[in-house]
Amino acid sequence: MRQRTTIVLRRVVTPIALTSLLAGGLSLAASAAASSPDDTSTGSAAGSAAPAAIDAERCEANRAAGTITYLTGFDYAAAASMVEVYVAADRGYYDELCLDVEVRPSFSTANYPLIAAGEAQFASAGSFSEVLEYGQINETELVAVTIDGRSPIDVLILKPGTADELADLAGATIGIKGKLQPSVAAMLATADLADGEDYTTVLLDGFDPVAHIALDGIDGFPGYRSNEPGALERADVDFDLFDPADYDIPGSFGVTYTSRRFIEDHPTAAQDFVRASLRGLADAVADPEAAVGVAMALVTDGGNPNYLSEEGETFRWTTDAATIAGSATPEAPLGVPVPELLQAEVDAYHDVGLFPDGAPAITDALSLDLTDALYDDTGTLIWP
Image 1 (spheres, helix red, strand yellow):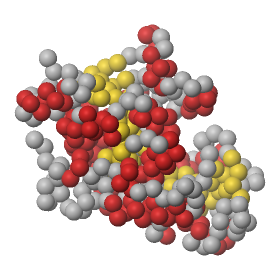
Image 2 (spheres, helix red, strand yellow; image 1 turned 90 degrees about the vertical axis):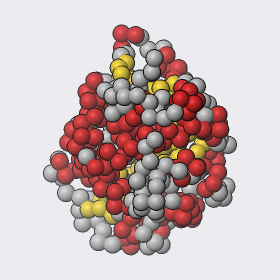
Image 3 (cartoon, helix red, strand yellow; image 1 turned 180 degrees about the horizontal axis):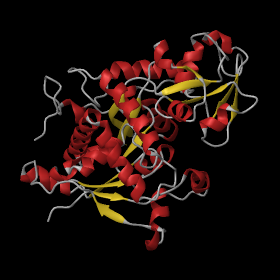
């Protein structure tokens, strides 16, 4: 009997609980296992029960991988490197390739140790540099397998009238959530502005951009192009924006990664997970409204503890999808990592201090083998 993709309609951890969870040393998987059965539910995706699309030998090899757990980067948001997995699961693409996939809501910063420990097999990351940074610090072999966005997704949001050009930000105070994004730091560096010397950063509480822009004592704060600007527009709040992409700052977003160990142990399952996810990505880019609908069904069924809204997720995915589609070419189709762009990203971020121990080789955290054979010469995904 064929196994069906399952989507866990349970929040492994909330943003508020994340800090205490990690501080206590409890893994997300352990937290989930400790949950009460009354607080959880699981369900099969609404995909088709079509016959396997691959031969019996490959099908058996894929089944031998067992349950493949995929961790989202932010709950069930309709975001790059996440929405394609929802769509692929919903339409039965993993099932057709004999993959037993479990989609589990999580948060990107919590995913790295779980993948490294083999407690999950694939996860969403914020950027390629983020994967490299974690791997370098923790000496783990994490491997990016698909990269949706080929530019930074970060932007610098300012109170109106704060600056007409980057140089005007000399002496500014920028609010941050954790640390300043390297793409924003690299953008400010083009105007010879350095953190701690030419501008100051201070920690912010919470995630509400409407509250943040009203704060006294800061001039602005970083955000995601596909999130905070939309929230401010919906609240009818004026703001100015500087986008690193407009200053030719390299970057990436919407990254799916795994461990090198999983690729070596289950090469066909790893490649076919990527294949099905890329088909889901193509569908999601072609029909953003339908993709958001799939995400919102998961959000609603799961109780929506992070207050995701249809308006917000529509803004998020239509923004992400337009950026992703705009960079795709027959030579570099959707989701395929482009080494030259990734090298430029790492070099630029090293220059602003992201890699204090030296810029790592991008090959340490990159696999092109899984995508190289998945597209034909016209950039069309090959479905077996």
